[in-house]
Image (cartoon, rainbow, N blue to C red):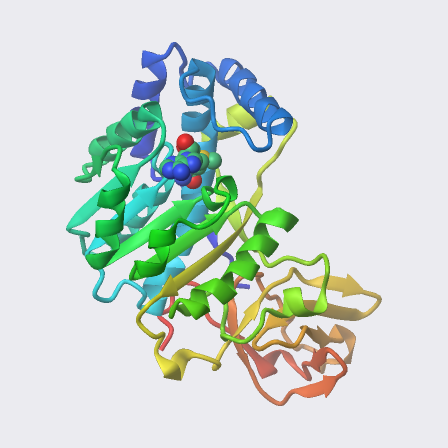
Length: 362
Ligand SMILES: C[S@@+](CC[C@H](N)C(=O)[O-])C[C@H]1O[C@@H](n2cnc3c(N)ncnc32)[C@H](O)[C@@H]1O
């Protein structure tokens, strides 16, 4: 199994501590932070449509020590997937709309730095000045050149004409509709909560993107209708990564009812430039976890507008065969398929090949 395990670079710990201390919190007091997280979580539950109360110290503390690391890991996995698909080719700027504390833009900038490249312009924007200030502090601490400010509507319209990747992490969910200027962007990375309604809304947004002339790079492996919208009233497309939580995060989480060993999210990477044709349709994407049912294993997969599942019977494999272990979110290639209804039967472990998550897609 090619597990995707993602953490937060250690260098963020002192930066988070520095910002937390300014508002009377510390990673050394996990109980106090856990109470702030619980309070913000209760606020979101009571006000599902509400804006983050950024002015409040408890909201800033919870955002820095809890939501920042989690959303950083989610964004980092999308940034990694973009890198291996060659998605950054020709892009020179990043623009994070609704940046919050910067988990989106920082994950993409860190990914670029890892591969020895740098975006010439990085701009982070949020309705809240407090959020923007925190994002800037973390970015500068991480030695990234980043500008952040409140942009006028005219200015945001200007941006996409440059070779800009627009990042919207957990923001589309707060918008009644996609801003009109998104349709003129060169590239979009939209990351959303993996709730049924948010994810299905994002899946439906594919059609708008295609109508606006975008090409879908990930997670979709095709540009036909989304099978989960077409054949299901309730299923939704989402990814899952393993969260390599730092020790200090575990201390906070210990005191909370919610646990995060794995993190789920939904996303779309879209570009005006076409995805290389040779890589389109050659792969299928695992869009479910392995389900074990009395001797048969099943796993949802997406390669066209059909609702399909891989199915295999481990006990029917020759003795000594290796087990098939497939990770949701990964790309696979397979051969020798036998189709039975919605099932693609896998005759052996050799019939399927999972692309390592770090390998460039040829
Ligand atoms: C749930 S937070 C997500 C923050 C960050 N992007 C992340 O992934 O952790 C949503 C953010 O979007 C901002 N926001 C909401 N509507 C916005 C808009 N129309 N323009 C800019 N920012 C907006 C909010 O102030 C808030 O900081």
